[in-house]
Length: 280
Ligand SMILES: [Zn+2]
Image 1 (cartoon, protein in one colour):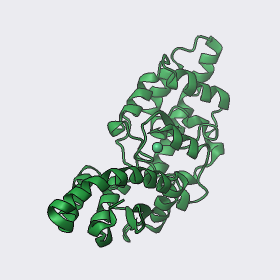
Image 2 (spheres, protein in one colour):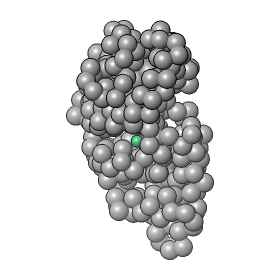
Image 3 (cartoon, helix red, strand yellow):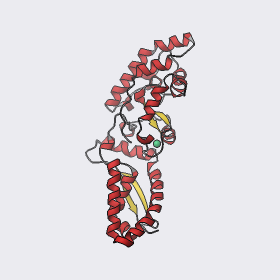
Image 4 (cartoon, protein in one colour):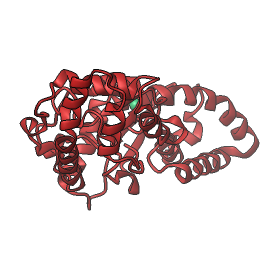
């Protein structure tokens, strides 16, 4: 759920690049005749996304007259995503926009592909539209599949249009057990629109982020135990607490809603944890 800058390539130039090397003259003419339709569909989609109503778009408005769904999908597969495809430079630019190659949907795994926000099987006119393509890890891409949101409350979080990262929405709590564990949950600020609060929760649940972050946290907590034991011996529980608070600040500075920020904030806030809860 990280924000990303919008790709700089337009739908029309990407489409024109993708069809530029179609050798079959008839097929090329078919594709070329659809250029305006694709550009218009893409503008309609961009306007809807800008207003947060892309989930209300109708599939029937995103078929491309004269071009089959398979032909549109093939443009993406063979001419944009393919290593030697003529529109591959746009694909590469979109992929490269993810900081540290981290997937913006889970904020954790490496980017391995592009995800169609509006699935290409249902919205073929947007198959090569840059604003409909976001960098994604394979797991998030698979989890999303061809789903289309049924309502504003389940609409996909969009890295080019949503600014969820301006506020803290990811929180964690320490589970008082041995070894200690951390549980993550979504708690957006009250000033968010109700639908956005629901979307953040839906995103967190449907992408399995709670389990992902808890598993990562367990690894870090196991490492942390030894270091904190030594800190506690040298400077007592207060030394442990300061260390955790400083780590939280440092992660917060890098990213407000990373699981590390949430985890260290929760650890620093937990009297139980820094008073010895960390020992294995
Ligand atoms: Zn991911």
